[in-house]
Length: 325
Image (cartoon, rainbow, N blue to C red; front, side):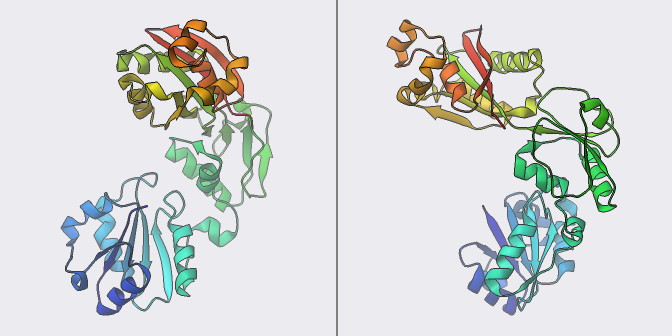
């Protein structure tokens, strides 16, 4: 991860040289000063930012650029003599809390965590979602659940999976509808309407793709969206796209992975052949690419449960699997 370290005194610079020599160092001692009005390039260009100096300086520098805890960098403040390490921004999702604890241990300092869940001793809902690889897009509902947990209230909870946060007041329910209340949580890969609660979407769906050469990128994205809707799968449930190595630079497949924000995973024909006995194959395809089925065998590289073995359209073949949890 890219880390910037900003120093505002000789003592801070000495601390940076001792503990952060491998990072990008800013300050007069490094002939690399940065003004508040120019700080946006640092804020938007790094995963983590360390201020060695007063917390007030950090607040003034970053205030104009703070937007969303899901995208903002982790920001940590360290006093000039290295006694305290304090996460200021993106403590959970950005990893500032964990980074502060790690750096404090390395420096022999004290990490000062001020987030409510850490102070009260339970696992925050956003940390739980991150740990389990659950996606979400409703920050207002996330805040409702977080506030309910801080208050010690019961959390109505429906889930397709067994995982639960480390919180004593979870009430398991049998249906999505029952959990769809203010402060409730529904954990499902299904594309359902949630009116009041928080939907956490497990990233468990894997898409295997075979393609003719020179296919239309927009057509593939449209086909994927249509297919997910047909099977009532939430788009955020997509974990990865899988294909054979000879298609690793196929523009449509590369474009689709970027459009959905998921990794594109590539395999040799030999690797895919381990799943040939589970898929309907073609001698022609085997003669052409070295394995009798591309999309089906590729999908099995990500998930064990077959949802749709072959969907053929627009010069593409899609297969959908789901991880077993």
